[in-house]
Image (cartoon, rainbow, N blue to C red):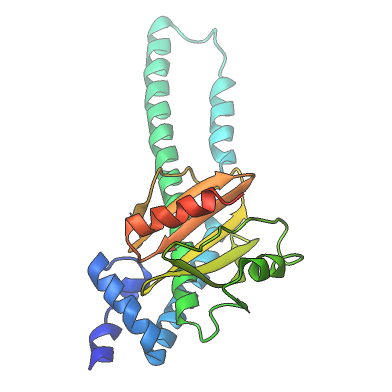
Amino acid sequence: MACEQWRGKLDLYVDGELEAAEANALSTHLRSCSACASDALERVQLKRSIQTAGKRYEPRAELRKKIAGSAAAIPVARFGWWRWAAVAALALIVTGGWLYTSLGIEKAQRQRVYSELADLHVSTLASATPVDVLSSDRHTVKPWFQGKIPFTFNLPELQGSEFSLLGGRVAYLEQSAGAHLIFQVRQHKISVFIFPDRAEMPRLATGPVNEVSFNVESWTKNGLRYFVVGDASADDIRALSKLLRNSG
């Protein structure tokens, strides 16, 4: 009966359109129901395939440069003052439109990254083998990544905290290899993603934000970009992020 209740909401769940309470309840159900977890995983894989295909047709920034270059090449002497006024007004419109478009593109890029990370988080929870290195010992997990990703990182000492390390695996974000670590706090599992920081990554929000049905916090440190994603409370996300920030 519980499966019938949730299967109709799996698409909303993987798209991040469920309310937080329902998303948390469904996340709990997925951890105990292999059939629904498998269905959710199929939807995540289909969604990621569609996203990958869609990126082939994204407009490039060179288009704006080409238009700006064409405008700059217009001869100055052919214009009277009134035409210059018209050009100035047009420039303001174009600049405003460009700024609006740039902000819209940036927001869409941020949403896309968060959505892809949420998909990785969901698919990991739904997988029969969520981690490739299963250990609560940071001195076992960290060395496992050597040679598998092009960077190293530090893990926090969790003794005395509510958090425990479950293990990790290699993950990919926009063709970039990184570390995917799984932590647990009470009944909640939290994904920590670490990737090389790149210029095309979207700007960061300060503090935990609620994106695609999960709380997310992100920051940069030593040339790396950290993402903490989970259905745990914002306070838990913030606490784990603080431990990671202070880890060496």
